[in-house]
Amino acid sequence: MSLRHQLEQAFVKHFAKTPELTVQAPGRVNLIGDHTDYNQGFVLPAAINFATYIAASKRNDNKVRVLAIDYGEQLAEFELNNIHFDPKRMWLNYVAGTVQALAKSYPNIQGADIAVTGTVPQGAGLSSSASFEIALIKAFAELNQLAIDGVQAALIGQQAENDFVGCNCGIMDQLISALGRENQAMLLDCRDLSVQYATLPQDMTLLIINSNVKRGLVDSEYNVRRAQCEQVARYFNQPSLRQVGLHMLKQAETELDPLLVRRARHVITENTRTEAALKALQQSDIKAMSYLMADSHRSLAEDFAVTTPEIDYLVELIAKTLGTQGGVRMTGGGFGGCVIALTPQAMVEAICQVIERNYQTHTGLKASIYLCQATNGAFRQNN
Ligand code: GLA
Image 1 (cartoon, rainbow, N blue to C red):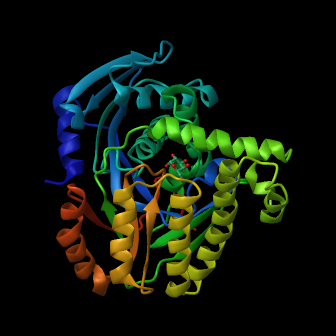
Image 2 (spheres, rainbow, N blue to C red):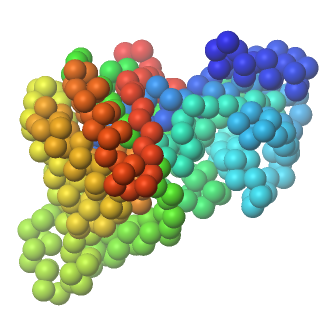
């Protein structure tokens, strides 16, 4: 039985009616451009074929009932005009936060019965929460016939994270979950939210390796990095690091704290690499992509300091086998999580073997490997 079908059955069992609709929104992997989104920079993610699925029906009152299949079929409910943070049920806060943010722009939305399940690995840095928010917005938009586009949906999802859940994230995860395209990567300019797409080479896969490193301090360290970047932008009297050039940073090197210089250098050089990566993909120049991804990883490890020894080891291990026939780097926020290897199909087997043979012996952890394709976002328009 398909997951969608199971979800619909669970909905019927708990709510004693068939759902009006079932929607889905994908998780994401970022090919290059990390810790640039909240600096108004460039990112180059792809939506992946892991998703959050929601079955839903509209209600005639303002009650929202939620059935969380993956949390032991827990059932919770709240009223649209009485939304509170629940420290005990984090999963529910995503619903409450998203609905609250949505209701700010669309105060007339009605209540709903919702069942949710998903395949995006949680806590792996593949944006299970953004995909949850985007799926919720999609469901409410369809139930209430709201004309929401992908950018609006992403902004509402981000607002839920920033204002309700308490995560100071950028816009990348929500926007790619909304506007991703099948077989394509998406360059997003986080300054004006414009997008460009590049087709991924047909014979290559998105091989994602989960280090299974327990991610601690993610939020606090993320916020520290963000504050450091903002401090440098302020020093230059600029709204963000996007307006700061490498030459400006070099000139100020003697005056700025060396740690801040490294943080800003990562962001500025990563923006250049990310734009170059779009061109490399458009020209199917895998060798160039390979170098760009390697430089990005180095910069995230040395200048931005968001990798762990296990992640660095995985990247080094895979790079040895991949050479310049593909690219490999950490992906997402860092401090554990996943590595992305843009891999020729013919080399997938060899890469998996090299990981199986070495990773656990070296780190004591077992990696999980996901073979992914780029898929459509939940708000993808047909054009
Ligand atoms: C997390 C955040 C994103 C982005 C990445 C790093 O995934 O949610 O907004 O900042 O980290 O690139």
